[in-house]
Length: 104
Image (cartoon, rainbow, N blue to C red):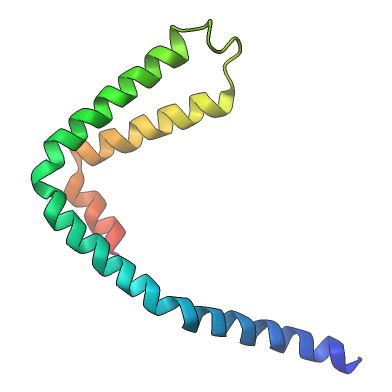
């Protein structure tokens, strides 16, 4: 076994750990920023949910009724639309459950 074959995995591990050490503080700062933003945006939650619902209705109309814009619907676009609709429905119906799942 050559020296390069033994050193390469060790160098990869060192590179991964140094990248983690570099970016981990920024992840904590970002999490703190998102927590602060969620506290401030809690009062706007009904308006944000209403706008989300309206945008889902617009997406539904464009996907299923406006066939002249898009002649052929992609299965990916249909799957993305319905997964977004399910996620929004879960956020509306079970906000505390999703918050506990995200928090760990």
